[in-house]
Length: 326
Ligand code: SAM
Ligand code: DTB
Ligand code: SF4
Image (cartoon, rainbow, N blue to C red):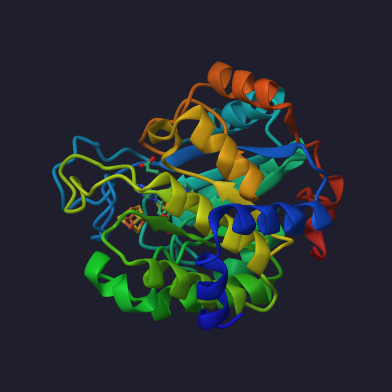
């Protein structure tokens, strides 16, 4: 879609826009199903990069300590708990600039993925930059989706990060696509960007081929010690509008209401779900930041009459070993 088309949608009267978001959702998805994803930080803190929102950058005094890469057994136990709790997707994140073939840590992560992928969940990782070889090895090990956010518009990117570029992010995404993994790619709002910046990011996403399988929309979790701490919170109607436009523009994608739900009311979240969000992170913690508790989320889903999305066997690691089509 063009920027002008996205902007025209965004500027519709709110109820017209969310009605169109809801209609686009119902064309492609079972009404009432919410995908539950569990996040685990398998390597926390000490990151070389200077992303201005991130508590895990070694450049800022945030109180997040650098930890070692988690052992396979501990990750596997967390994945098993996530499955028992009803999550159908397990996403492992590492505070790295990227990974390199031949590196012992990368080998360890591949071993962990091989084990986690036997549980039958969708397996997602977010490890930073990848080359072609690394992407193929991740796919072979059982990764079904790779999360690599563009985070903001090409124009605003350098105001937020200087240690890598928007183009670097796109290159990794191309490697992920060529290796046949699903692309999970979205952004963060509330980083001082304009509405146009948010829609320019969406314009880039709508031009991906194939379309992203998931689009996480994060609201900035203000992290003490980072340059972006102190940004004003995101306006709920701006968030709802962006979700609806994303749903209309990329109707088959999971639109994930990601970081920042602790900053939203229940009513605000309900409006986001109506506008087209159909996936959440489920569990008390994101990577380092708070997430609503499992009991609170279960209660919210119950009150709204939403049910966890059943596993999609066709997207499990085993089924995706050869190829996964959207
Ligand atoms: N290091 C890898 C990378 O940057 O791609 C993977 C981990 S990184 C923490 C994954 C994503 O988390 C970021 O791209 C960003 O979208 C999101 N994120 C990090 N800190 C955040 C914050 N304070 N608020 C909202 N989203 C955040
Ligand atoms: C995504 O888009 N959001 C998640 C996941 N992908 C890796 C991460 C959110 C991180 C929030 C801040 C933190 O926990 O440190
Ligand atoms: Fe490092 Fe990722 Fe945080 Fe950037 S977002 S500082 S690359 S962990």
